[in-house]
Image 1 (cartoon, helix red, strand yellow):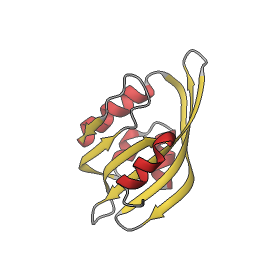
Image 2 (spheres, rainbow, N blue to C red):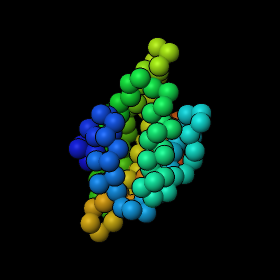
Image 3 (tube, one colour):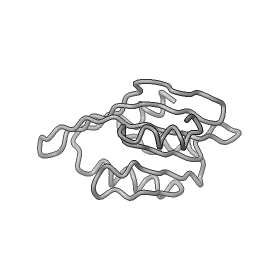
Amino acid sequence: MEEAFEAWNRGDVETVLTYTTEDVVWRTGGALPGIGRIYEGHEGLRRFFREFAEPWEEISIEILEVIEDREEQIVLLTSFHGKGREGIEVDGRFFHIYRYDENHLCREFHAFVEEDREEALREAGLE
C-alpha cells in the first residue's frame, strides 16, 4: 500500500496501475471541480490522474489512520495537500476504501470527504 502512495505522490501513474486490476472501478469523493465521479479500467484511471493532477503544481496524499485492514478491504483516513499552479494551497482529509481481489490487486476504490464519515463507514460495512 505504501509503495502505491509513494508512486502516486511522485506522479508515477504506471506504477500505481500495477497495484490495480484491469477493470478497476475508481469512485471519487466529488469534492474537486472538473473531476468525474466514476472512472473505470486502466484507461479511466489514467484519465483520472491527468484530470486530477492538471491544476496542481504539487500534490501529496498521506495515510493518517488505518481504520480497518482485512484481506479484501482496507479503510483509511488520509490527508491531501495540494499547491495549485497559481500558488493557492489546499489541505483536506478523505476516507478511502480499497477493495481487493484474490491476488491483492485493487479492484475498487471509493473516496469520501471527511464530512461524509458516516456514509464512508456504512459503505465499508463498519457502522
